[in-house]
Amino acid sequence: LLIYSAGISFFSAISYITIGRVPGYPQELIWLLTDGKFGYVGTSDKDMTPHLTPVIFIFDGHTVFFVVSKISKKLRNMRHNDKIAFLVDMRDPNNLYYNRAVLFMGRAKIFGLLDAVLNFPRLLRVRRLFNAKYPEYVHQYKTRRELLPRAWRTTLFVSRIVVGIDVERIVYWREAGSEALAETTMVCSITPYCSKVATICATLAAFCPIAT
Image 1 (spheres, rainbow, N blue to C red):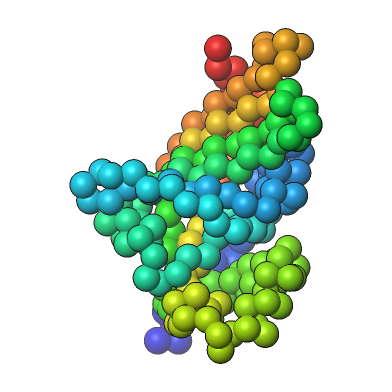
Image 2: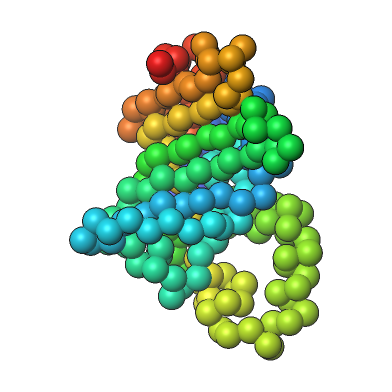
């Protein structure tokens, strides 16, 4: 058991160091993932019926995480079919030409109790990021806890489950104005190995062909 624990710790440290050396997201995507308040997660059930719902989310510098209820349809869908799409979209209602969006396509990583033990420091940081990004949301759920159905409460692994995205493909687009049509959309495919080491290519410009 001690050897097993030491091995897990060793490989976790190696993975953390490796991820830390991989170039991160381009600045425009970081802005979207930091300032964006809602994401839209698309799943499908065993009959391939699509399902789309808004969720709150955080970005820890490498991975996008969101939280779902244990009794939600999207969690049931992800257990049957882990392929998901996740969209973050920000736009100015007074200027339809000013918009930014990023679409992640990949596989859902559902964090169970064993995953929580093996990734405790990282999930602790994820919790802190949620508290910092949505302070009013967290406060309301804490102060009104007893008034909420159990499934709506925020207790992790009792009422809520953390889900991360192992990204395989990214689509990014911005302004619809004529001056931006030449570079409106960029598409990036990530190899399975790369998606386990980091969640994006070094830069969209270097790795992602412009889609026409």
